[in-house]
Length: 143
Length: 143
DNA sequence: GAAAAAACATGATATTAATCATATTAAGGA
DNA sequence: TCCTTAATATGATTAATATCATGTTTTTTC
Image (cartoon, rainbow over all chains, first blue to last red; front, side):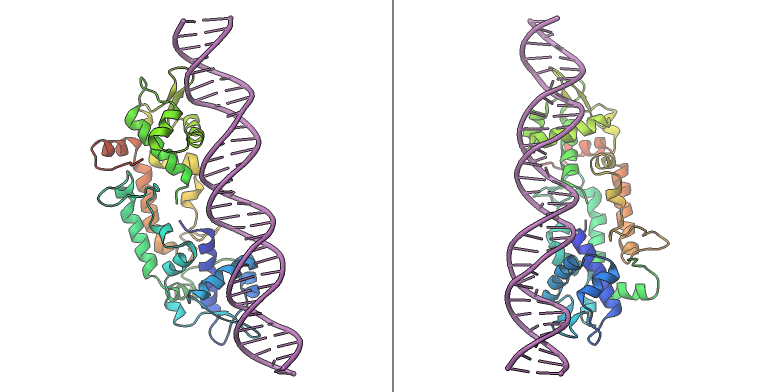
């Protein structure tokens, strides 16, 4: 469903949402240590997210990655789309090219409703929503 | 969600469900041609399914793969489990080792209900169910 | 009981995804 | 303006998955 990469990306963005802002940026080195994921790999992912304006960054001394209030309004699905591409989530579960409502594959009707539901939820959930839950200890992000 | 392998496996089993029985077996060569998937790859998958008694087979002349009425009662999930392993479907969507109801990851509560629903549906859907739909042209399996 | 036909078992290769490494560019401070 | 710092761009390596190939065993038929 999600690639390893987008799992990592989501973790990192959530960490940034909780611990950074315009005045408190964080270097990839520190991020990777805190969330316990490979530095070079995380770096690549964050760079991609930054390029697509999902998160923010500045170079040089005192630079680093951070998320602005505006960034926090990005949705979970937008992260997934940047990292995994738009297709991955929507493609037919049997991998058929032309599977649709009119010409459904054998499991389309069965699982499509649940999957659509999931996608909608991810599309409507913002980074901010998830960050709030973490702050309130309603959810957990063990490293 | 599903590996390529289990997609292929499901396609092949459905094809067998529609076109074979104890008296009409089919060689992997013919199966692969009909469903337009690589022969050697399909062979390996069918052998695995046969070993686990999800489908049936006999060797030698007039041999081949086939599904019995009993085989048709196997569920979609059982195919997936044989090919992909039990964990793949159930593992935390963020890949966290200890994510559960008591200690949910940031997206657990969000997507867990939909996913559980999906799993339940797959666990309760038999090959026979899907084959019936195909026979009635309610669903399609283009090659 | 020998020959042929088919699945079975095993392992090799190729492709894709995950991970790592490094030279380049921009920002900040002296 | 120059040096240091940290992201950026790009590409290399490694690991996992998908794909292919082949010798072995079982079954049928003559």
